[in-house]
Length: 190
Image (tube, rainbow, N blue to C red; front, side, top):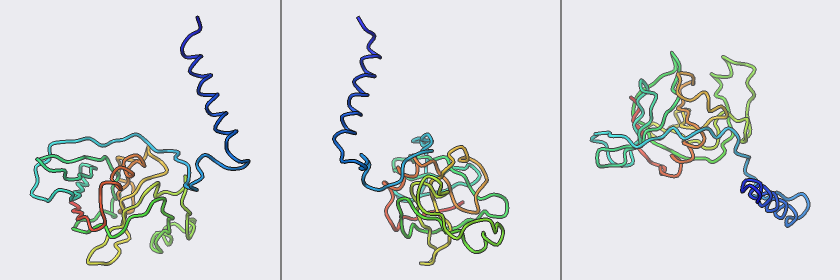
């Protein structure tokens, strides 16, 4: 009798070969033209006790904790581990999600490019883009703050003071948050 793992391998290989043969030459099984999903990173979210007077659906960012909380009600929230602004780049206040983008392109602000002239004017969406798989654009009084809640091309960088004021999550977690949060969501940064 052969081991089950060998049988599973042959079955999986046969399925993949069948899929490849069923597609026209040069066509991918992922023909939706979205970038591949490398560096997704683990999910660092967890349901936690979180008493607050804020409404269900509000995002509360506690920079000292390097945590983003999505209020779910009943004294609970989903907690996501995040990176926050390094020294000199932190900020507080109340903003709202003004728009959301899947696989955003990144255009470093002119102030950032002045500090780091080696940065390109634009990094297209994809696996090398530092905004990762999703971005939530933050507005204050209807104006773009230039700050984002976004994914990353380097999940090992989540959980530190290392951004220029944005809030960075693993791609796995930013995709989850993106699905849960509508445009107009209140974001409280503490």
